Amino acid sequence: MSPVSPRFPLPAPLQGKCSQKDYTHWLYGKAAAHVRRDRKRGNEQATTDSYREAFHAAVCDGGDRDAYTGELLDWSLIRTYDNDESKQGRREYKKRFALLPTVDHVDDGLGHPDFKICSWRTNDCKNDLTIEELTAFCRTYLAYQERDDESDAPMTDAQLISDFTRIDRSPDAVQVMVADISWPSPSQPETTWHAFANLPAGATEKEISAARNRALADKRYFATCGTCHEKQPAGWMHDDTICQGCASRDFGVVY
Ligand SMILES: [Zn+2]
Image 1 (cartoon, rainbow, N blue to C red):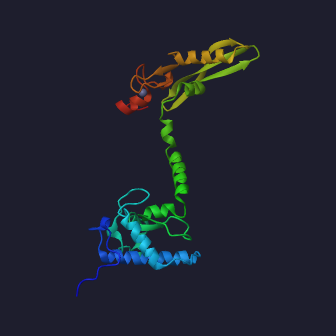
Image 2 (cartoon, protein in one colour):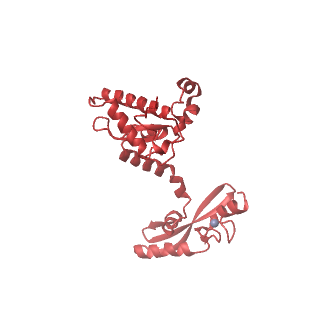
Image 3 (cartoon, protein in one colour):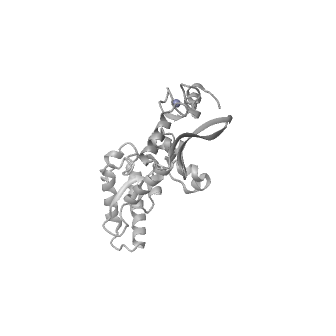
């Protein structure tokens, strides 16, 4: 008896990663489960055979990688997931299956089937979102998660002027004040405001802004670190040449 060639031969990208038997089993099982789900959602056209063909085509088309993240999937994991072990091992057990290949229904499951192969983790994260919705969400998520990085960015001259100089107006004068930062105790900075320039009450915005810029150039109040080359309040310097941030990072100075 000659061996019967399988209806859905193991796709090239999966060779050596799983057996024909496991692949066929996976394909039939996935198709049956998706048809059940889509029929429940009201798609009467959904048939197991058309789903098998569509899944198989998706796997043949680069199914060794997650279609959304490009991650290499672990096809050796198919048919190894154990529900009982999962219940005992909980999250840790499930995490081992992050790269288990699965099928994502790109549309709502009601129209012509459109499938992508992706990891279980991706599928979990994506849930019912469209790709556009997921992308928008990821951007929002990352922007918020990475917001602290921005506080490490060097302060611009405009930020320094806005944070460390201020304007006090009275009926007969405009005073440009500048912050003087001192350290009465090592962890507790104290800000004292010094009068830097006295301008007449009718001073223009341009004159006021020029005075604030002069304060920024005044070495009593602002200094540039020789190591990171960032301008900062003189009170943030360790000595004439290096800022406290660089001194503690590079030379282990503790404040
Ligand atoms: Zn520095």
